[in-house]
Image (tube, rainbow, N blue to C red; front, side):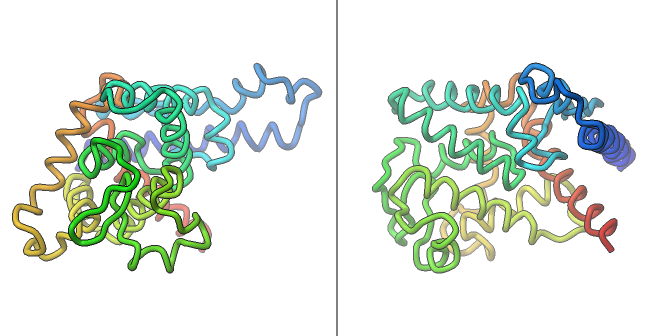
Length: 257
């Protein structure tokens, strides 16, 4: 718990520093601010360091439009593309398209990109856009049309066989299920609960062996997201950032009150 408190304190310090930089830039608006090289330096997210290895995660503590203007966004998108190409099941063009959709939506919903990749590798490692499970789940991230299309169709589109649409659904659903986990859960418990819900294994009786789903996703992240995690452990790459995102959101809500 002491380690977690330290991480949260470091994150809040980083948030304060980032807010100061952005506020100053908005107020002063120097003549050279529009130049790309200067803007990138101003928008660069301060490092969050510590035992966790959580660092330079602009999606974690910056608005999506700013986060996607940082060098880290481009690195994450390229890393995701490389991990997809390493499977040998995608052309460069399609890998780039999927990676762009996945990382953009991960930044918007503030979900670790490596987690998105891990779920995708478990659900559809051959990347067949028309893949359909026995229960009717469709596409790259195996979305249930009858459950999610009525809710998300206007937001993301209705063709779940289209890569971009399917990935956007999947990332959004991961965020929804993690948001619904109880506050008292530890980072690992929160991760596990959210992944079980994504898999439809809420009671543990829906599918034989479904309770192992979080561990299967973890294994695929460790094996297949080497570029996306860039040397970080699974906890550092997925579990801790996921937990911190939820804590930052709650603090922001308290501040708004």
